[in-house]
Amino acid sequence: MSSSFIIGQYVPGQSVVHRLDPRMKIVMVFLFIIFIFLANSWLGYMVLTLFALLSVVTTKIAPSYVMKGLKPVWFLIIFTFILHLIVTKEGQVLFSIWNFDVYSGALWKGLEISLRFFLLILMTTLLTLTTTPISITDAIESLFQPLNKVRFPVHELALMMSISLRFIPTLMQETDKISKAQASRGVDFRTGPVKERLKAVVPLLVPLFVSAFKRAEELAMAMEARGYKGGEGRTKFRELKLKNADIWIFIFFTAVLILFWMLRT
Image (tube, rainbow, N blue to C red):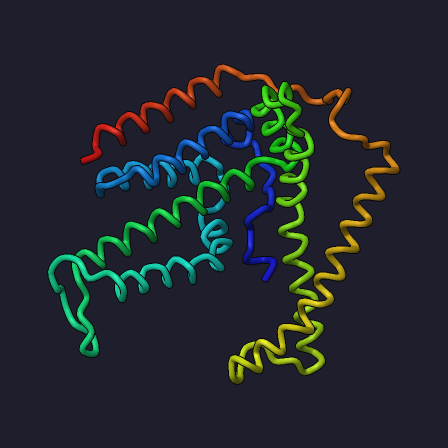
């Protein structure tokens, strides 16, 4: 399970995307997500998809590794597509399966929503694959720095998000270990009625929650032992500075968004 779940993991590298300023990456991903929901034509989706695929290639991370890591998400994408085929009754009838009519509007809407979901997950995953949790924390804190004037806990919020991302792969590994341990004791998670499967999940969830609370307590004690008292008065070992490469990449990204906007219907 852990080997096929890459959301929240970081893959070291020296690619252009890895060296890009984390603030710039967060802003670009945020804008990309906004424009995903503004797309209303196949040409617009094609531009966004080509940019996403170019980003995957630029990271120098094997595309097979990225797609394999998104395997747990494919179920939701396919389920979303099938759900739209069943619910949406717009357009002309294209064909029938088992006396069930599939409409052209349902096919388009299913493909549209599924593609949106895929691009959203892909770009956010690339962000975590190419950016360390510490860099994400520093970037979020820097971007929301003006909110400190209204006494908003920016540092604590950034730290909380960073720790959450860091613990996703850790909890997945823990889940994998516990499930294998329970399976060796004869617990079956995959066969039998739904009611029996739900009962079988209980021996998995209880030790997982116990382990998560234990890790949280150990982390809190470690932070206290190192004198952590919040972000006030703290200095940084690594200062974030924009480079010429960051500006040129953002200009290219802006050009892609302008092209996308021109292709909207």
